[in-house]
Length: 119
Image (tube, rainbow, N blue to C red; front, side, top):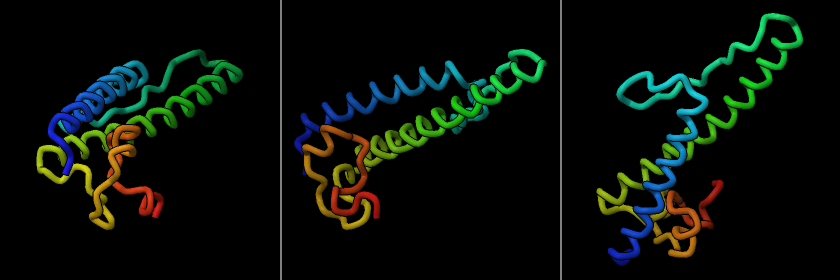
């Protein structure tokens, strides 16, 4: 079981990262689509000539890839915060063993131990 003071420290880190990601998403996204906070990547309007259009598509694809990665991290953070509320934070989702504190300090949204990571 994680010491309550350490869990509060990890919660603060999660909330700070959540805020940072949401701010970054708001820069490249058209906004929130619904109450579930689904973001939609904006397609920039650069120009209509062929070369500018290719640049526009390239920029959109780069934004889309980065946004998808950030959305995945945001989902992990929200799951970790929910696990804290439920009292299940810090246990591997696969083997139910306690996740080492060093791993949680390095990556507070981790939901698996290193043995199960990537399985």
